[in-house]
Amino acid sequence: MKANPKKGDRVSWVYQGKRTFGTVESVKGAGRHVIKGPTGGEVVRVGSESNPIIRIKSEATKNPVLKPRAELKKAPK
Image (cartoon, rainbow, N blue to C red):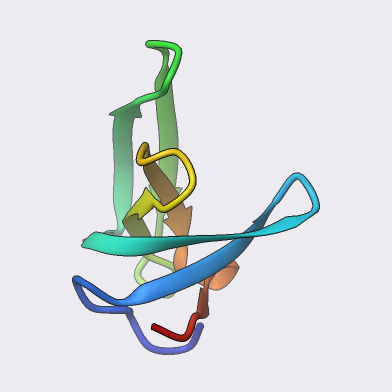
């Protein structure tokens, strides 16, 4: 994805070989970002100015997901 997605945009990414969908909750930007994983552990992603971290709510699991912009594609609503 070339442009930063905005809050509410529907995006997709590949997880374990399957296309997964979700809704953008926020654009975190550059730096280190942490969320709690579904099993209680920490999920850490590090973004840069050219590849910021995007927080997404997964449609399948309703869990928060952190993904770099480069891994995302715009999905139809």
